[in-house]
Image (tube, rainbow, N blue to C red; front, top):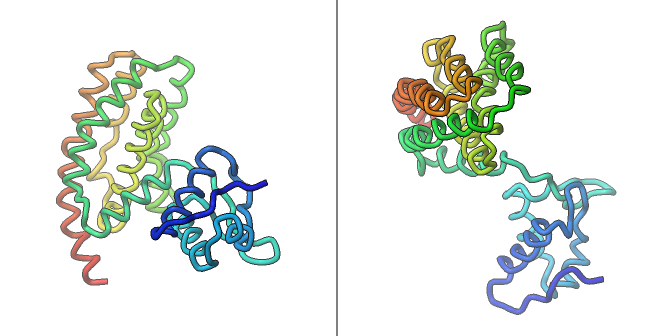
Length: 242
């Protein structure tokens, strides 16, 4: 049984890539499954091994497949998630095509709306989870990475509760960029993010007060975002020196 159409075009590599992506996105190949071998793909597409390898490499860079070595090696389909989106934005930030000012502007538009939607869709069964996430921000942490992870969990939880997976993808991407800067530059995370700031947002969400939730999130982000914009200057200088 053949999965793909022969390629007859000057843009061979891109056409191969498009068909492979299409096969993954339409679940012809599911997470954990191995793509056909290079030889089989060459026969189906009627192209050279070099073209197939270039297309597979592009799939790997985009997070669609994982390359394994050894007797059972090959290209295995990954379980696509939000990390691929976040990594793409992170690459743009590292190459100076996105700034923290850009990110802060988007966060000020997106996250208050996420908080409002979270209040709208809040279910009482989620109350303990949100309150526990907030409490865990203030216990002893084992590393800066652990500290930043704890400080972002409430944002991720609200993004999930809001009910819009695209908002969730955007929020997670922005949090990844924020963590990149904070971990590299900030020596005192408490100056950036004081205790109780998330609690006010959570209380508004639990009360299902949509406008209050949006207002508290905007207030939380306002000073925090300004600090991040200033921190980016230090971040860029450190990158140049490395």
